[in-house]
Length: 146
Length: 122
Ligand code: HEM
Ligand code: HEM
Ligand code: HEM
Picture 1: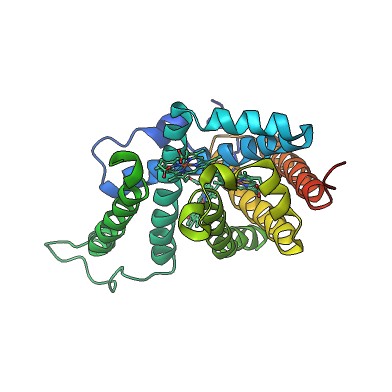
Picture 2 (picture 1 turned 120 degrees about the horizontal axis):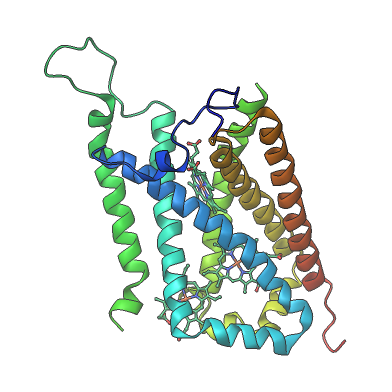
C-alpha cells in the first residue's frame, strides 16, 4: 500500500509483519499471543454485552440462551476464553514490569559475549508463563478430570 | 502528551479490570465455590434480577463496562493504527473507534439500568 505517502506510523509489512515471527525470540511469539488474545477478549466483550442485552426480551429468551451456553461446544469456547484471559492478564503483568524498567538489568558496554536485556529478563518471563500455564490447567481441572 | 495520557489510562484501568473481572468470574463460574450455588442457578433469570437490584452491582458493572471497553478499544485502535494509514484515515479510525465504543457502552449501561429498575411481576 502507498508506502511513500506520509503515514501515522509506517508499518511496511502490514499484517504480515504482525503474524510472521520466523526465527525470532520467545517474546516475539508472546507478542502475537497477546495481540490475538486482546482482540479475542474485546470481540467477546462486545458480543457479550449485546448477548446479555437479550435479558430485556424476558425470562424465556434468557433461559433459552443459557441452555444454549450449557452445551458442550460452548463449554469449550468458554474455556478458551478463560485461557485467553489468563494468558493476556499474566503476559500483561510481564509487559508492565518491563515497561516500568524492572528486571532488565543495568545497561552496560557491549562486550562479547553479549547479554541483552531480553535475555536478562527471560527467567522472569518463564516464571510468569509457567504460572499462567498452571492457572489455565487448574481452572479447567474439572473439565479435564471430571 | 495527549497520546501519553491515553496510553497511561489504558494501563491505569487495569487494576479495575483485574478486580471486577475476577469478581465477575467468581459469580458466574465459581458460584459453587463462593456462594454454594450451582452455576445454572447463578445464571438464572430470577437470580440475575435479584443480584441486579443492588446499587453496588449497578455501579460496578458500569465501571467494568467503562474500564474494559476503554482498555480494549484503545488496544484495537493501536493495532489498526499500526497499518499504513494516511492521516485522514487515521483520524477516521479514531472517530469510528470512539463512536463504536460509546455506543456499546451506552447499550451496556442501559441494560444494567434496566435490570436495576426491573419490577418483579411486571
Ligand atoms: C471464563 C471462565 C470459565 C471457565 C474457566 C469455565 C470452566 C468451566 C468448567 C471447567 C466447567 C465444567 C465443570 C464444572 O461444572 O465445574 C464449566 C461448566 C459450565 N460453565 Fe463454565 N467456565 C467459565 C465461564 C462460564 C461462563 C461465562 C458461563 C455462562 C455464560 C459458563 C457456564 C457454564 C455452565 C452452564 C456450565 C455447566 C455447569 C454444570 O454442568 O454444572 N461458564 N465451566
Ligand atoms: C487484568 C487484565 C488485563 C491486563 C493485565 C492487560 C494488560 C495489557 C497490557 C499491558 C497491554 C499492552 C499495552 C502496551 O504495552 O502498550 C494490553 C493490550 C491490550 N489489551 Fe489488555 N489487559 C487485560 C485485560 C484485557 C481485556 C479484558 C481486554 C478486552 C476487553 C483487553 C484487550 C487488549 C487489547 C485489544 C490490547 C492491544 C493488544 C496489542 O496492541 O497487540 N485486555 N493489555
Ligand atoms: C465466561 C465467562 C462469563 C460469563 C458466564 C458471564 C456472564 C454474564 C452474565 C450472566 C451477565 C448478566 C448480568 C448478571 O447476571 O449479573 C453478564 C454481564 C456482564 N459481563 Fe459477563 N460473563 C463472562 C465473562 C465476561 C468477560 C470476559 C467480560 C469482560 C471483558 C464480561 C463483562 C460483562 C459486563 C460488562 C456485563 C454487564 C453488561 C451490561 O450491563 O450490559 N463478562 N455476564
